[in-house]
Image 1 (tube, rainbow, N blue to C red):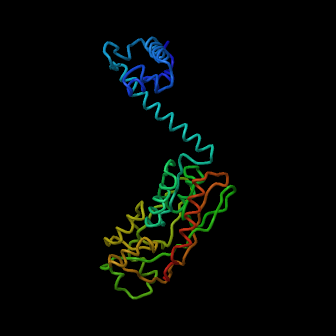
Image 2 (cartoon, rainbow, N blue to C red):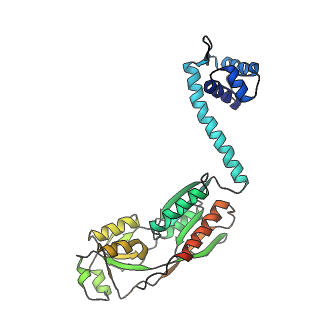
Image 3 (cartoon, rainbow, N blue to C red):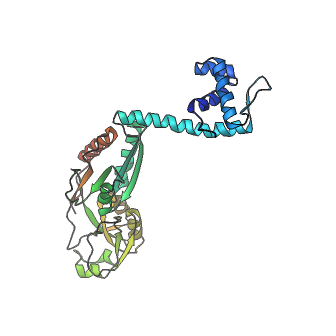
Length: 303
């Protein structure tokens, strides 16, 4: 019964193909030519097929040899990557970092951060996802992410570090041609109840869903992302409270109109959350960069 192909045999086939001969491969691998010939002959015997056509001056792969080499190179690449990842992990550098950004964190805050991270840690894969309301907290508790950014009202939980991150302020928005754009201010609850609210669905799968700034009995249109919510408000499909950082450009361009309401939502603190046991250097680099960026950010505009 044929056993698994050894990594040194795959490396030998790869070297022969790259350098064109058994002798050149032996020199590249710091082996004697007889050792290279023996490795290939032994593998051919185990597989029961010829891997190289030796009839010419240059060793040429047979179709079977090409198949073994193509698949073998994938294995060699994965093995080398695994070795690098293991060494980095041994130095507390994570091979992958998973981050949940709450939907209220504007893209303008995220993409410069990602760009800086890629420059500082080019070997660490970054997985960024958007979560809504309790979804960020749940993703962290379930171990689906290593860091949750921009979480509001996180409950106390053993083993979770919580650091104040930012202040989140909301603006009540509607389209310029919406009925509420010309209504007297502040808008009362009765005025709001007559119009459909745009809502981003809580992404929590198990925890109790949360909702913010909604009135009982108010009709609603529920979407899955903050971007979809704002686009729907611009299209006149409803109204709603939006994070100011998300809508500042649309307000300045006149695509949205800001309105005062009787129940204006006060600024809310947000937090960074991560497991206390996490000691990865990439994670802590990201936390420090997020906090530094938050300190440099201008204060929220008065609502």
